[in-house]
Length: 193
Image (cartoon, rainbow, N blue to C red; front, side, top):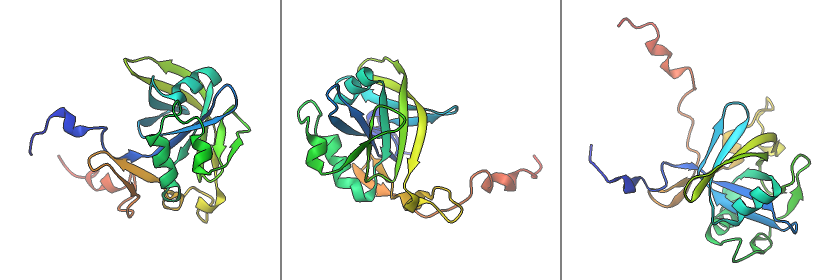
């Protein structure tokens, strides 16, 4: 193995690119892109959001947000949302030409063109230095029927989801299925030590 400094890891390994949508106190839609996210058991999602972001301010004030998968069809819009601050361009959602509908479950917008949206209530903010962990309780997951398989389950390939790779500063889609979770390792279960 070749050794690199910790800085070589950059923002980390490839992660799903997400669009975090909020309202401000005037009802204006703001969206940022984000890839620092993880899910918890028990229906919670953790976002790593900078304290200097309009989204952070909106979540604190409004107590809700939505998390949409950025897709190949929405790549330009998602990239724009991550390139321009909501403090500088309060109309960036309108400039992107997308449409939003108010969630039935939380006080946050749903991007109509999204294939999968997680609707969240703010549960907690864990304060760090300049990045806070925003913990949201997942209240609902809205899915476009076009991304369901014949059994009515979500087909990840059909979502068109994007991944951000910080090593190359590039976006990627899902590759081919190469195995089945909790099945591939069974070959080792009956082996003698």
